[in-house]
Image (cartoon, rainbow, N blue to C red; front, side, top):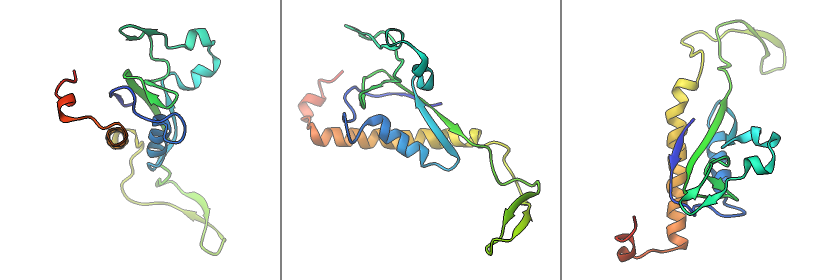
Length: 154
């Protein structure tokens, strides 16, 4: 799924964690049923020594955490994957109930996408960009930087 890089220090360690904000935004999209960052669920079976993102003078040696540690961006690439369910509105007859609770058969005529994946990628990318922009604005509000300091940033 989407990968992006932003400066380190975005997010908070408790209530406004960057990964929690991204997860909330991405999971709010229709059809998305799950999200994982970095190695995600594979990390649960790894040893801490194998999953640790060691720090070097040049940055992190690995990116098992997906660019976010303790709710704060590390400056490494932010990596996450979203799980998208299949489209439920299909032409085949399906059992359901009507407004009165009576069993009925339903078929949804018209155009159907067999998978949302092709269409949802740009939406997920846009949602992630909105969250990162919001976090950057929050960061600037909490940690103001003068124009002179901005001109000297790499």
